[in-house]
Image (tube, rainbow, N blue to C red; front, side, top):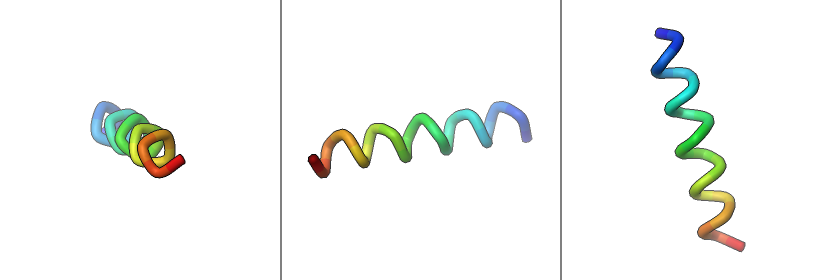
Length: 20
């Protein structure tokens, strides 16, 4: 679960970066 949360945050950051 720990790794999943970290992965989700990393993906979210990547999506935000891609959208900008």
